[in-house]
Amino acid sequence: MFSLVPDLYAMAPQGGGGGGMMGQIILFGSIFLIFFLLVIRPQQKKVKRHQQMLSSLNKGDQIITSAGIYGKINKISDDKEYMLVEIADKTVVKMQKGQVADIVKSKPVKEVEENKSESETK
Image 1 (cartoon, helix red, strand yellow):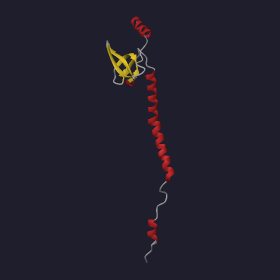
Image 2 (spheres, one colour):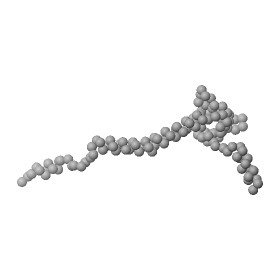
Image 3 (cartoon, one colour):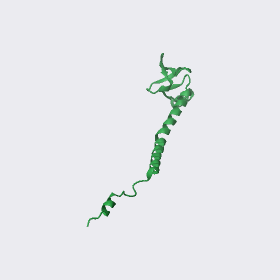
Image 4 (cartoon, rainbow, N blue to C red):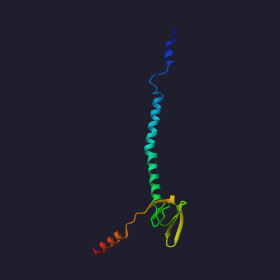
């Protein structure tokens, strides 16, 4: 005899297939949170530190540009976003403030002289 019951069970949807819409929202939310903590937030902190460094630039500061050029600031224009940087004797270039990668931390003159005198006495 022919029965339709096994065919009907075969066509029925299988149980335990998903967590629904709420599970997907939690999954995407956790992925975004991890992405934010590992990528976006550190980049925001880096940009904020760079802006603070640019606002603290003064005439006479020794800097290094994003191109790797060392120089000394001769003049900073407040109304425009550029400055004059001396990269060698009597060689002054005009560049954007945003191209400054870092302020070079050099030892004060007195400290350098003290180190020289200590090494000479040894």
